[in-house]
Length: 73
Image (tube, rainbow, N blue to C red):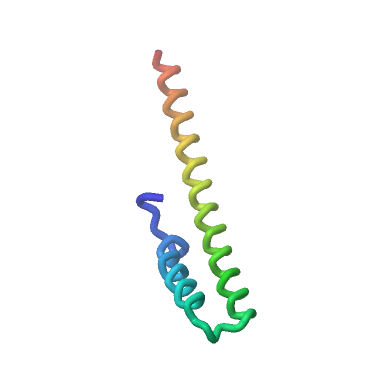
């Protein structure tokens, strides 16, 4: 996801740091663990969505280039 900058990708390191801190906290109760796990799952889903969107855009761009090359051949 090189070159991608948006709130989702920018916050990913913060979510990871928060998760590491939470998992190291012996006093954290089950609900707290569930909450942080859900936050991590949501962040991963958002990142996967961005990656899929980038892949689709790259494929569309390649198709466009191929079509132009065929038209000029």
